[in-house]
Length: 250
Image 1 (tube, rainbow, N blue to C red):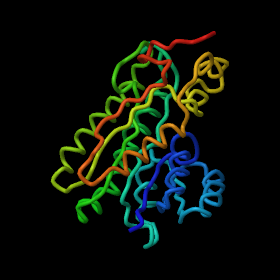
Image 2: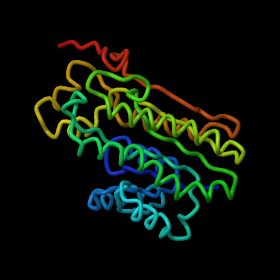
Image 3: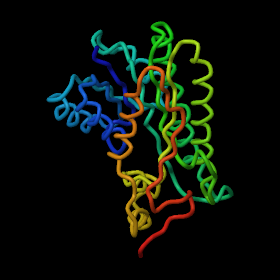
């Protein structure tokens, strides 16, 4: 039977790459994002491969999130796979000079966004006693690095939520896991550093992970046999050993 996956943050990076990977495998898609024009473009491209429905909302907005998911047409209502991918990082400042606006954005999207979307989807999974939830975390959820403070806190929270979900949903046969990438070459640095010159140097001098690399891992994870759940996966590019150790050629 054809499965349906809902992916947040589907307009770029890992979310977009995962949408392409799933579409190639014939998985029906509900793609969520803030940029409607991008959603429309991706939908037109992927409809050649699979059935695609788009939802235009910001995961920070609880009411819009719940309203959007509730509005799904019948053929897309049963979500078998939830990919909580929407996330962001803002700034790289010591705690004493950090921006409260940046803190709010990271906690609202990275933590509350995961909770709001999951709250809308989980009841149908528990009712059917089946489903698979993957939360996209970060290596920053495994260790705290200098000036990472609140971003690291938000990604540590994603891991704690994932573990709590896995425990609470275990009696219902629902798989829950986290995939935690290190340095992935996406729009991430542009958002974090707001277009500053530093953003263009983040991935120089080494081969960073690509969004497609993580998308392939996500598909591998959701395609395991029913008795296999990949609970927690940390992925680095070969050049990276930790959040602070990256071997560069220049």
